[in-house]
Length: 174
Length: 330
Image 1 (cartoon, each protein chain N blue to C red):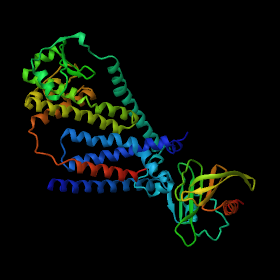
Image 2 (image 1 turned 90 degrees about the horizontal axis):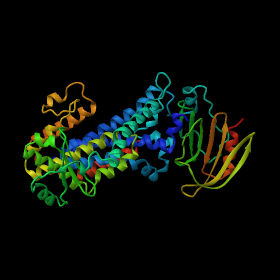
Image 3 (image 1 turned 180 degrees about the horizontal axis):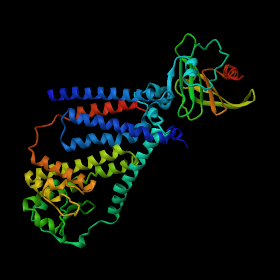
Image 4 (image 1 turned 60 degrees about the vertical axis):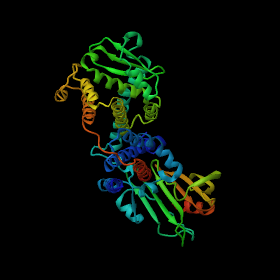
């Protein structure tokens, strides 16, 4: 029994050291390369850290969306990409995500269309966008608009029907 | 296709994560074996199965549990995000991921030329056949030992060759082959111990764990951690059969003495001194072979330690740590 317990203590200590080593290894690339994907506090901070990066932000926000963004992730390498997440006003629930990326960039977590009931082409300010309407994981209505802006693929996903989504998307283009 | 594009495909994520998961599993298993002072090769081999088998299923299993695990949001909150390192650019603009893929490519070649092709060749064209040699009379020892092990008595075939060798073919009709050179250098006790070791292999081949493991291992052909751990599991098998042979003959020294005849030198002639075996001009494979023999001999020449703790709780704890920690490694 004593041998078992000392074994458990030694093993738990080894796990703790491994976790610390992994955390250190996870942090090191952030220190070595400033363009690595990381969290920012504001869009201005992204623009300052990754100069030359154009970030599309809507000028129209429905009342249900809370400003400022709750989460901003961005990277300059290996390709430019960012994702901005907004919470529902007065709630902790993510209601809107805007991602733009020059490469594969998976942002499906807090808002992800699990079923698509309708998909149409939507023309806005000279761009052809794909508009998808369906439901998110909990059966709530969700919609998604995707189009290309230069080298970047822009995707706007919202926990609502398409009406507010199209207005938000259009307000991102000038 | 760029490196980051590949790494974002399901195949890319599978390759990267199974490597990371096996590495973490290997560290945890090694620590567990040390923490609980587990030296029994049978139990050590079972622990190694975690490192070999778990990474085959870990990525699809985790994705099934949480499909959003591959999203950037999850990656940001992960304990370790491999893409940070793999997309990190080195001084001359080459990402670390390229070096990583080169390492996996080299491992794949090692697997192909050192494992897959030799195994296929050996399966299709066995080195020796029953017709090549003559029946070797080992008295009633083989029959009696086979009875204890509850296996059919295998044929023992003597091949007229000077180089000392002894191995068993574990097909439908198991056969033990030994060279006439070996019968000249081993005492009768050593020969019995060596044959008992082969009988142990035959008995264990009724449940061909290593063959099944090898089939799984093919899926991880690119994974250097699995390559190393599979080879260790194979070496554990030798130690397991050593223990069975000792239990059958009751003579540790005889088996140790027999093993000393299998040291390799570049000229392929056997030598008896372990000091000579590590001399220069020896291939890595021969050196590794001798190191393994030395460890087996040292083990046989040392009195066994007392009873080990029940391995169930350490195994469950280790497996749980591997599963939980790796979930947070993407």
